[in-house]
Length: 374
Image: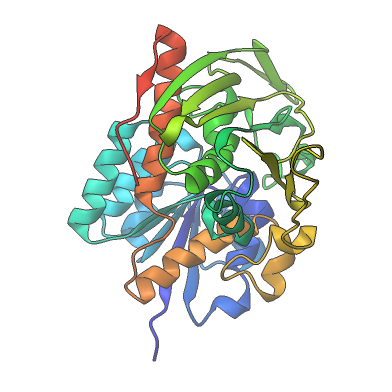
């Protein structure tokens, strides 16, 4: 009989309710996981979630879940500022851990987590596993083959006016009335870089390789944010721009803003003989008509270009947050089959260091060296 991993989830907020819990509750996973427990500190939310999805155990205290639920894997979907503390406790308890988005907010914390996991013999996966997407692997191959000549620069980033405008949060019940104002607080790990640009940065570094140096400019656009009848003074930068140096003199502009964003492809590359756009319409390669002729390469149709993720089959294809589910099941696969995660903690640490160094550069006005690799 094959082993079945007992899974618990910390954080029953928006991302969990919209996607993670519906995915993990599906009957097609019962040959690999038992979705055993949920935890959320907001009174009544974990209980209501467990009742809705028929999850056996629910807790309002994280330590109690670790102690009593008899888990093999912990999925952490709490506000990002809690990831390090919760991750360390899970590792020290001998649990394998998946982090939704960045596993910490500092390189030092990431170093500590990785060292502790190795000492305990447990595995870490930190979303997003962007390089599991076929479209990103194809983009990397095209650039390495010189389809646009010598690569010069790239532009990528994410913008969104704010999580307070998500339709999911409009309800008044305990499950959907999830306050998002922590996204604007430094202590909670807020800001668009850890929340959104983590996707762009994992893709960029996955395609180009490790970064070498970074310069940053960063600030706060709106000094106050509101959600229903609540308000918060913003103390975490919501408008950040980084200039990053890669190998062979390649530079990238990476932006993250909680503002209405520009309508552009996910990633744009410029080279000596053409350019390449990477987005939901696939991969498009252009050349100057006068010099090189017009070229266009589209990987696949839009739906399959960003799809075809490992482990995402059947009902999971049409459920939200399938990319996070894919990363969770990648961890499950690695634990069950004793494999090292491709969605590595070392890559996640490298991205965290870029963000941390970018903020430090914005404060000091000085270029920052990047010390990690993956």
